[in-house]
Amino acid sequence: MTSPVVKAAVAAALCVAATCVAATSSFAADMALKAPPPAPIVAPPSWTGFYLGAHVGYGWGDAEVTLRPGPWFPGQPAWLTANGSPTLNTSGALGGFQAGYNSQIGNWVLGVEADFSFADINGSRSTGLLTPPPALALANRSFAESDHLDWLATFRGRLGYSVQSLLVYATGGLALGHRDYSQSILTDPALNFNNIRGSVTQTKTGWTVGGGLEYALTRNWSVKAEYLYVDLGSIGFFADVDTAPGFGLTVDSSSKLTLHTARAGINYRFDWGAPVVAKY
Image (cartoon, rainbow, N blue to C red):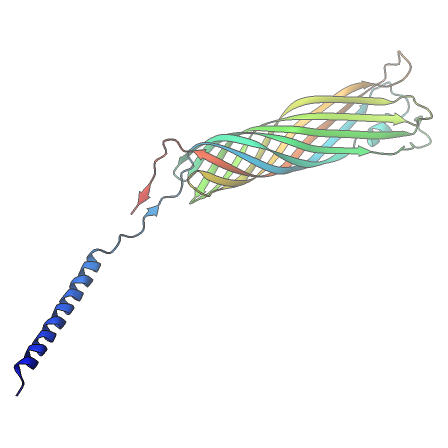
């Protein structure tokens, strides 16, 4: 026969167990009802807005020199033309700043950009004395040429296609560059006649075309890699030949410069008024 004390203890234990089961079920139900919402899906960044940035890069190309002796030049001008018309290999560093504006319509991005680069892109040549064929009435001559670009600016349109945070674009427009070109053709120092010296410094207008990739790191910051082909046309001069007065001997010397440039840059976009879009 079970004592009343034992019965009371068993009843109390059963009551506590039932209370614990009910509390556990209630807590589990509350947890199910109060589960956190799914993480928000943030829309890709918009490229719309004004931006400022900086870039560094490298340029390389050709300066095609053309020498044309005047009609009264003594001897055979063809020898001078052949030896005084080299192609100079130009190369050097550049770096500067850019500013622009983009407008995004769907995945398409339309924009304009202007940039200015300080540059040290140079090509030069210097020969020793070259001896013409014995049949030509010309003295031995040495040739020296130099074409230097010290700044480059472009004003371009941009058309791109955006995939998430990546923008792929084509670009083209106007190019400006400040150039120094010179040529010297000197005779054997023992003779010292019919020397030719000339130079020109000019800001030259040309054109550019290229493309690039830009990647949005954050809502405002992006990095880019860009290639541009630049054609700055020809600059030149007419030079009088050092000779006796009244002979009227002249030459026409010019240099045509084309460049390839590869640049890396960073931009900060001022997305004034651009909406913040998030989807749940």
